[in-house]
Image (cartoon, rainbow over all chains, first blue to last red; front, side, top):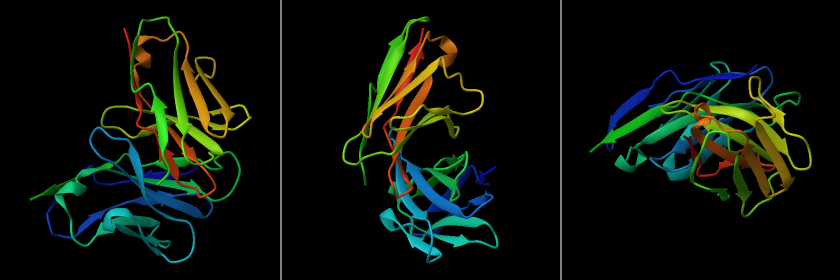
Amino acid sequence: AQSVAQPEDQVNVAEGNPLTVKCTYSVSGNPYLFWYVQYPNRGLQFLLKYITGDNLVKGSYGFEAEFNKSQTSFHLKKPSALVSDSALYFCAVSDSGGGLNAGKSTFGDGTTLTVKP
Amino acid sequence: GAVVSQHPSRVICKSGTSVKIECRSLDFQATTMFWYRQFPKQSLMLMATSNEGSKATYEQGVEKDKFLINHASLTLSTLTVTSAHPEDSSFYICSASGNTYEQYFGPGTRLTVT
């Protein structure tokens, strides 16, 4: 079985400050990890992914995430938050192996990020 | 990123009728499409996974005879909610995935059953 935990329902930061949205995962094989963002009244958008290679991955809108295998984490970060980053963020994991879960992602419950001016 | 369209965006239907929702990948060939329900302030609940030309694989607890999924081509999947009831009212989202692993999501369909 695969699972994702986003321990914070809400993250509040001031504009210009760094932000972190936390994610930990559990998967039996090697993980494929993703971050998606859902802006108000809009569909989910793909932000970034870790498949293999460099543990630090960079994505859209200045976001990055670091894969930490020992801590089974994939936290989303941005050095300087913008008010326009305010949205709902989802972490997701897939198992790189085949079987019943092949290709399927399990999503966390989401973290609402609010960036205040 | 890739574009996925979903139609209709909103639909209201009477209890007992059926509703069809279309999901199209506009600029890439989707080998796999997924259907989700999203409840207010909750995460995505995967309903089923469909591969082009194959029968859909449903998650536990999802009635395959009630939620009919057809993945007729690499760019089109449809979800038909048959004999809809008020408890089927929800936000339905489709996504499409190719050979790069991430999913691209449609904008969703708000279904209200009266």
